[in-house]
Image (tube, rainbow, N blue to C red; front, side, top):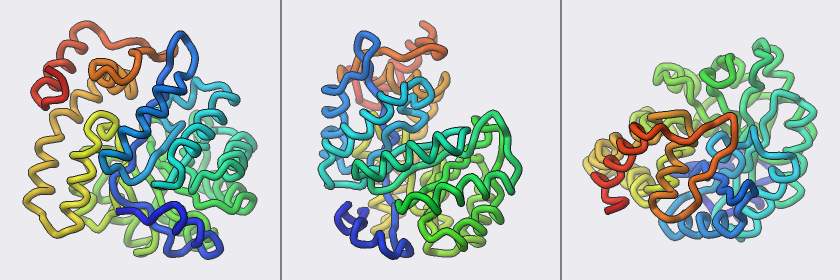
Length: 310
């Protein structure tokens, strides 16, 4: 299990040793009639914590951060911090392709009590490795909060190299880890080798959770945890306890469900899944569109096979 948020706050003066591990959910942002459904968000948070989730990430990709207004983005983080009440860490999504905007979002998350931030590589403008370094260093030097970088080349158009991560980890005490989603176990291993054991490496892809743990990684920032939080938490806990058989069984059990949740662009399927479970409205914002009828039926069948719905 992760340390409590209070324990993390005690470590803020010296960021080494601040660890973010386990099954951390990249939580959806529920909408109702075009607006953030604050009540449903609070209920989702309770569902996560009661099922053993080790941390909450609001305003990530799964939280539809690109289509939230600045006011909504700030409000979702504030609601999450208030609802969690220091029971688990809140790792607020504060990334942007504008360094100034990412800095503002990160300052706000720090001011309202988030325990860390998750910052995606700047997207669309495709910075060089030096540009990535300067971007993260600028924010790290101006906000005293733990920063977890987010490397997902399929969405940003640029891959942060392990050497760049190691440079940042070495020079910025509050850059404490990475959510790695380049789809390469070799790169995950190279990051751990370059950055050392105090650097948190968590998967950004549910399928890689078990393989990454085998390499020495620290866990997952998960999409599937939105609908099956207890099983993803159990996988990570079983591995930590040395029960490889149980961890492997859960990996194989979760894999078909993971595939169904990426049948179309995330978070379209996972929001449909949560709606099928009666937890939110199946409402997303353009330019994303609802699941096609054919894929909706495939998702339903996968959820029935898993036992999430009847």
